[in-house]
Length: 64
Image (tube, rainbow, N blue to C red):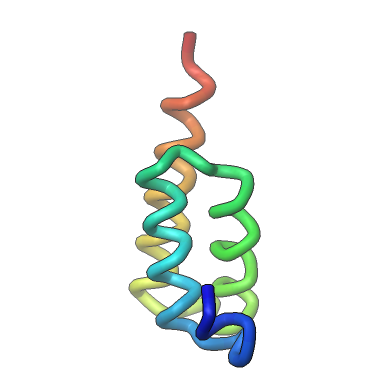
């Protein structure tokens, strides 16, 4: 979080925070970081994998 305060476009920090948020099932917060990362680097493999992880976690969370 501290890095992102001073460097809001730091791709590594966004990816790391989003990963942590996904693991804590804080998917709405993770979505913001995933979308921001996608805007910064839409073809980055790690960002695409992160988006997939977020989508899968969201899908699982919505199941009864």
